Image (cartoon, rainbow, N blue to C red; front, side, top):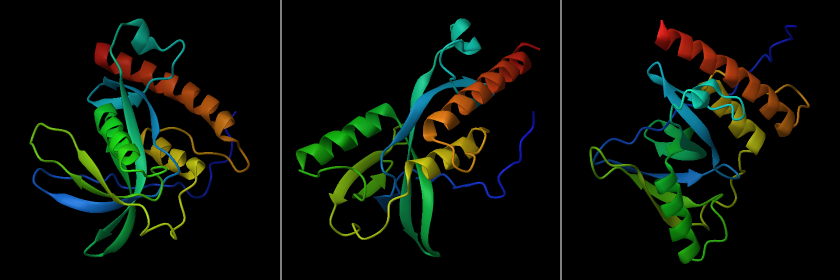
Length: 184
């Protein structure tokens, strides 16, 4: 059965930090949104979990996380997604804890990429400056990330758990199609 598609999808650009560059951001999401992904057919696909065809073929996966961030650019403040690796997230969380920040939401950070083959480095700067800005709810963050991965949009009134079940089913279909393209 085909349902009505929502009239508006949340689509956010992914912040790319080049080698030698840095920028100040504010973590605008309630938390990091992360999941396992498989690299198939030159792109990443969300691992649907139980019954995943890529896992059944022993194709590796890795955790991929995203924060919704606010960035001050020349053209003005923008809301974007920032992709983080497990090591990058763990380092940020550890530093924020050591510096006494109570959480990551609303934290101002400096993001850089010091080496060409190195990952992002996120250093906490201040948690007091941007507390007045509203955070992006988890449902909106997941909807933006789902758009990147070709997953269905959240339906009006749908809970995050209900959407996740639909998203996992869609991810399973996408993984199967990607595997078929790789095989043939």
